[in-house]
Amino acid sequence: MDKLSLLQGIGRISVFVSLLLAFFLVTVKTKNKLANRLFACFFIFSAIDLSGFFIDAVTRIELNLEIFRSTACLFGMPLFYLSVLAVCYSDFRLKWKHALHSIPFLLVNLVFIPRIYLSNYIERDTFVTILNQMPEIYLIQILIEFQYVFYIVGVFIILKKYREIYLENYADSSTATYKWLFQITCVFLIAHSIVALKNILRYTGFREMFLWINVLVGAVALLITCWFIMKALNHPELFRGVNSKLKLAKDILPEVEEKTECKDVHNNAISSKISKLKQYMDDKEPYLDQSLTIQELANQINIPVRDLSVLINHHMNQHFFDFVNEYRIKKAMGILKDHSKSQLTVLEILYEVGFNSKSSFNTSFKKYTNLTPTAYRKAL
Image (cartoon, rainbow, N blue to C red; front, side, top):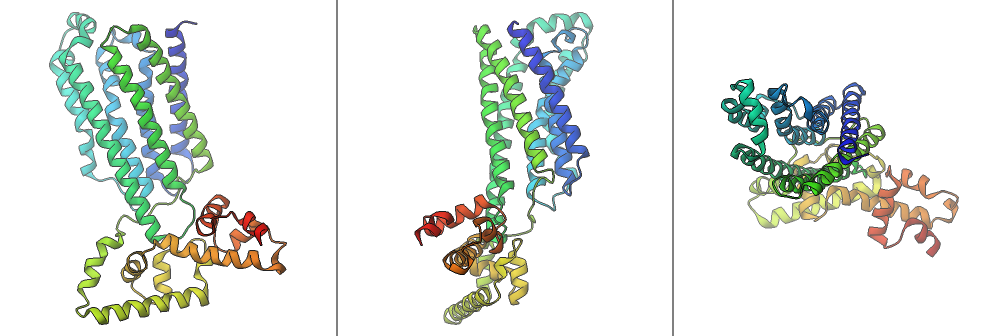
């Protein structure tokens, strides 16, 4: 099988799998339908882009459709960016302002209007042979690269803020959403680096290497799509989002401190609240609730959630996530020391103290004790 046939075969499989994944995301039952639909649109446009590996023969028949296909990739990163927003923030909704993300696609097609869309068929045939030498192509390629960098940086900023908000407001030990989105963003970054190298080689004399990298791009696209399918099958609900209206403690702090004029009174109040909070955690053990949030804890101890956020995340210098897990680990250590509970497995203990994942429990336990739970039990 020659390189071209191999590329066309990989392209067909990639398009089929991408469309199959899009169908799955649209039809699967989940609370976060918007995120699924945006991801489905992302994979549909990816399939349109990948179809260029095997439909090159129709270029001379319908050039307008081919130009649309080749510029459809400009919808890819905006859709991925919006998908990440929808996954991270449970209250995210599409608005008219999001239509601005289509500007690069419209701009590129407006550039092509006088040269392609309004030309006759004879001119189009000539156009195909000189397409790669046109200045518009160079400009479009540069625009695509700038667009990609813009959105990939934007996604990493979203993930950074999401992780900070999650750690300051939630005690659920599962951080699958952040890890999954971070992983897939890194994979997309690596894949696009290969695509960028391929595009550079297009304008050089390394034709043979260009074809092999095309095969590599198709194979990577297929692997990414299959990997995404595995993730989607394991987590069809696309994870838990946070409320975008939640603020970080560093943003709330100036507003809270403005209310207190006397520094001594302020410090005494802080000490009193910390004592009250620690006493409540020891007596009532609210951390045993796997889904405990800072809002729920604030309601239980009758402290405004903004004050509690500043108290834990700033004055106690801990994320809410770490603050709660510290109590869970201490509780687990007590169980492991108790000879009357030696028959309990590590899995039973982690669920009893409020964790819902063995990997999260082991990571947190080792953070506080430098030992795994099993090693800690043996050391006793």
